[in-house]
Length: 219
Image (cartoon, rainbow, N blue to C red; front, side, top):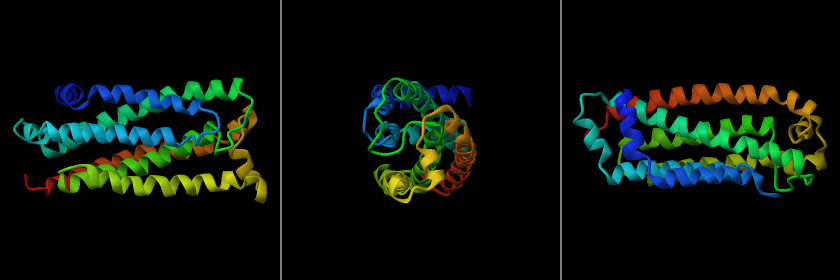
């Protein structure tokens, strides 16, 4: 598996994937929806699958002494690791923004603890739909990405709508989710904990379902 992961890094990650890490810094943009940079992460993952498709990576992998489950497992580990790096890179810039830029984010939620818990949930669902859809046929990844996109944007609007209308309904819990002071962010820790649980369980389910579907694909 170690050597196969090395193959994923060398043959499936393209230079553009490293360039896309810069999009994590978009959380620093004033009055900008904080979820949008993470959609670009999804676009970057599309490049991984597309690059693999063009290079006939699956056909090459199938002649190696490994199972179909190993192929899916290594791809899931690669993308999950890439996702963690993307998220971690964005965190310092969210912290700097909250500390030194007094203007609130009028476009949606602030880059706080609750936000990162919600990001983990959104990205878990995005990757679940994308990857499980792809391994159903294991051909071109475009349709799988489209399905994931149709999950991402409605979910983002659903999560942002309470923030956009928080001053209208004045619900204390929603107000607290959009704060960046230390006390409020401590109160937001349960949201982060739920996000972490969904992130871990989401990747486990993504791998299990994708591997089961890929086993049925006739290559």
